[in-house]
Image (tube, rainbow, N blue to C red; front, top):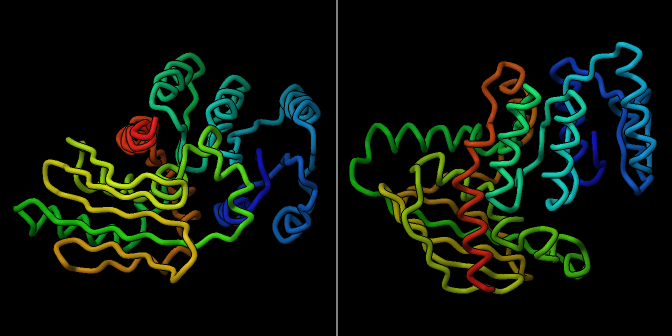
Length: 281
């Protein structure tokens, strides 16, 4: 596993839940004692060179490493996936898989060269409310749907000093906060036909996405205030505030079954996020 920050414990729990074993992990920050709750025997490294050497040593000793789990900053995902594939592993990568669409093409080529796969961690696709949404969209709503997304998740002053607030590293707010919501829209409605950005600030982004079967009004914000997570389709609310507990485990189960979210599956949401970001350049 590359990275051991905020989201890493959810991945580690999922690894344990599906009967896997974490052999080694790396993070420059050594506040990693939480790993004892899952895999106390896992080897820890703070330097990538030593981590790389250890992985190579294991493989030369005949130890098969099936997956490399990637939970680093967004801008490192592409390079980390490449490292995994070139070293004989499949990759399980946190969202967003990449921040630029053209990186997906390069990863597809490397998949073919290495005969290994890259899987994205887009767990909202497996949320019971999203599955219910999809059933309704397919079965009952013949007319284009009106979707309202109002996702406000306040962040303290630390956020402004972290990589998440650096557009070169995170892809900006639409990518960092919105990628999984736009992925749900693409999952439900297919290809986005037009992208309109109405407001584009570091802590507030809003606009309209038009799909063949839906018009999506969206607002994303990290400004201080009341937290809101509204996802409505034709005036019907879908609760995405709960039901997250075991979604990472569900994703891992689907990946092991060969049914995970692959590179082409995330192309549309990647394209949407990049187009929103480029509006401000």
